[in-house]
Length: 271
Ligand SMILES: NC(=O)C1=CN([C@@H]2O[C@H](COP(=O)(O)OP(=O)(O)OC[C@H]3O[C@@H](n4cnc5c(N)ncnc54)[C@H](OP(=O)(O)O)[C@@H]3O)[C@@H](O)[C@H]2O)C=CC1
Ligand SMILES: O=C(O)[C@@H]1CCC=N1
Image (cartoon, rainbow, N blue to C red; front, top):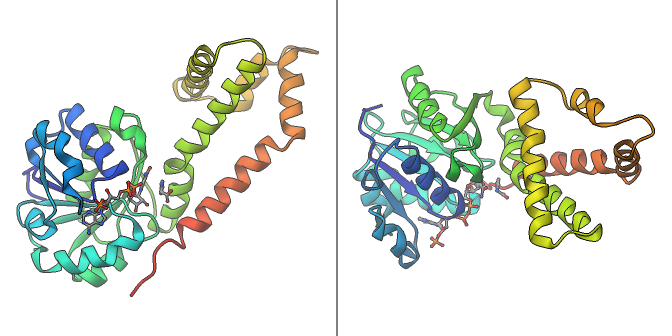
């Protein structure tokens, strides 16, 4: 990949914008290095004010870039690929796709067999540099994989996985943000029931969740190891925890993740 940071983010919705914000916040590149596209370009006025280039012309955005990030919905992809195919130069462009359920081979089938494609599965915490991003490719050169890893490492953690695990990564890490947020919301609702105002309950639940996750990451320990330290014999933690398990807490999380992974693999229809 060229050392140029000129990047086109095609499809600047929730994840495309989160990525753009994160890359600029981490000083990976400048707003002016990034062209954001969407069809309703009027919604990008604020980003234009911040120095990003904005456009509804995907072909021109690709022609002006070396890195092309695909960030539209799976059902919007084929129309987009048909539009940009003529602007892609395999010798110049690296294509990165964050789209769920679409393989590198699916993208090459539309853009040409020589195009190097890397799939990346970030999550919305990328906007604040806290993403868990999984990357995979079946044909990109080591140098390009290294550059994509560097890019996403500026905005969180990166793991390289086999492409056949990308739909699983989508469920666990990308959808996972929503799953953990719902858990935090539920905890805060419990907090209101036992006496706290909603705003303080939410703050308390969120910081507690952050601390719990940090224990695992910083001590490299297992959840049950840390849980054992909290559950005093005959105490209130084990009483609450066991009641949650009787109500299916772990089971519902596991079943939800399995269904999400299955659905992630069914989002794209080849044409
Ligand atoms: N949201 C998330 O947390 C994550 C999402 N993903 C994946 O990222 C992709 C986008 O998801 P998400 O951001 O949630 O969806 P959004 O609907 O928020 O974003 C999609 C964007 O694409 C734009 N768009 C649609 N068609 C075109 C086109 N032809 N040219 C340019 N822009 C276009 C839309 O704007 P307009 O209608 O104005 O064109 C919209 O802003 C999906 O494939 C999803 O699987 C991956 C990881 C995490
Ligand atoms: O809900 C979705 O389909 C996308 C993919 C991962 C996160 N959001």
